[in-house]
Image 1 (cartoon, one colour):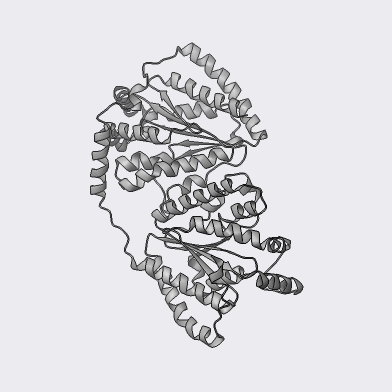
Image 2 (cartoon, rainbow, N blue to C red):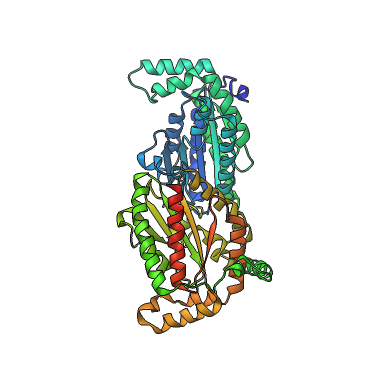
Length: 496
């Protein structure tokens, strides 16, 4: 694979300087055009040590408008990053729509290094590469252009450059002990990197292998590669979806799916609990929960609890009972509403990735990432293709949370239509509850069957051994609150 990048190609200085002005002008024009689109560009900079990756990044900053660039170097993990799933640091640095992100180092670095030094086996590397393919495809389907640049040097050239640079006091590039150590394993890095490139070279995110022996050839190849990709991207018009058609499609599918029994029909909504018994159980569970929260903190085990459910099913009341015994320093409650402009400029999971708790903390979501397959599906805010592929995207997200050691608990609180109507009317009549009822709640009620179908599909596609759904009967609020606390306590006891 790398033989084609060892041809010792070069470009004369005069040719380089003659070509550059037009290329720079077109790059800036394409970048300006990008700002008017719903697309983003992610440039992954990887390759052999000593190949001039730093110089390339500096060149891109020189040629492009820095106001539309977001550059991030991944080389030393901070405490904040080490306390969260590995992909957290990548999600939080993704460029918003209309801009360009340059990733100096990326999701490829750790798997390759770990395999070179035999910290993982080939099967583990392949699993990481499969995750990368899925991740990049997800970003591409959301409108990101992923441009992956691999800079290659022959072994003798790499050795020569590292030796030369280490002798010089001043240099445009920094070569530390790590670079020298990597150079000692050139052949092993070449073998593992070739496998990584081959397995992740896809139509959505192809690799460009660039010979870096001659700096002018390297830089001009990068300029032309980025320019070609940008101009092609801005020439392609954004897909325009008719919201009315999408809504009709979603409603039609939901109606068809809702014509038969669903998982919600199996929930015994008649379950109740005696008020006195409820008070005793609740007090005991809260006592245990307060202690477990500190135990989780000391063990550096994070907890994520999400609440979904019918409107007026009592999610807020359950959350209040859940957090009552927990030290306020240990948790955050996030109420998920319609995305902000900043959040709409990113892939929909971005706003949830950025809120993942640090080690030992707890995050409670009142509504969650399941909005993509519930309200966005039923209301037509997402296309059929978008919400259909979201099941796998969500499963991958939750799998990464669990793999990193996070305790994940998912609740669906269900009430029947009559109980919902009673609670809606109560909220209208009682002054201190009027803020809980909106016109949107009444509109959602008219789509009861569509939401039932969406919930059924959600549970079927996303309830797994590691992240099961807990379906809670909530016609009796007291019963639901006890079941919620009991489930969380049992999950924490089992995990700690």
